Length: 223
Image (tube, rainbow, N blue to C red):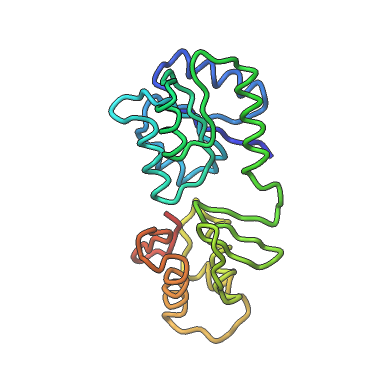
């Protein structure tokens, strides 16, 4: 599996250099000169690691990462920045950083740090599905949200699995009935709606995560 690394670096030459070395090392990369559109990208793409400069236009990098953490994004983050005082380094870790590299840095060392973090944070198990802070263990039939076990019925588990496996698509009610309920002949008009609402209540009891979006007249998607 190729890991995808998202880079936020406002110096274009440095961004291109980072992307060159990471791609040469076998990684997929997505580069941004600011935080604009980054959150949408995290929702739409499978990103395994973020490399973030702290000196960014309009937004301080560690404050942006802290806001991502509050919204449930758990991808590993390495700050690569000129901010190098003890206080600033501590601040970076407290705001959600997993590692901190100060400029100027050795590219080989950065690659080694990336490799170590990915080995620790990205599941190699093909029986694991993840989305934001949701982790589905397909073999053990377990769901973890924010690291805590959440109990689901088999149907709810299969429904969430189908949504995650098709996270870039809007799924119609007919699609869900066919792929989740399968050969069950007893359906009512609101079968899917009721199941979706029960699932949302279990994975987001505080109603502040908005994992599942209802698209009127079409169906459902992850958001």
